[in-house]
Image 1: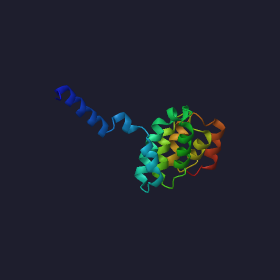
Image 2 (image 1 turned 90 degrees about the vertical axis):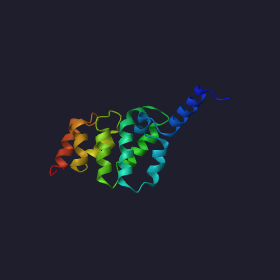
Image 3 (image 1 turned 120 degrees about the vertical axis):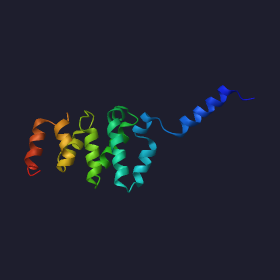
Image 4 (image 1 turned 90 degrees about the horizontal axis):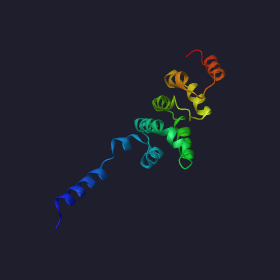
Length: 139
């Protein structure tokens, strides 16, 4: 015979298993990485870029996930859609874990992409910022 408590526990478990918790939905998941491989939709890639940006510091610090996070970051920074790069730039602009080469690439992009990195990046030196401004003065 099933008790009310057991029934409630099963229902709770089913509910928890069927929908990601809000914190989980905001984090990059393996499903996101798999979806990125075939994502033709720029909005989907931008969503994944935002998730990566929100969790990049934690992922980069972990020896198990750091190389994968760096590889995904490297792919997204080369995305043809400006909205994807801009979303990524906004999400990682203030991160001290972003490789300087990635920060320089984003800072040298179109101004909509570059602005948050130029304003917030702790990994770009004053000399690098001056060089970027000098070579992209029109923007």
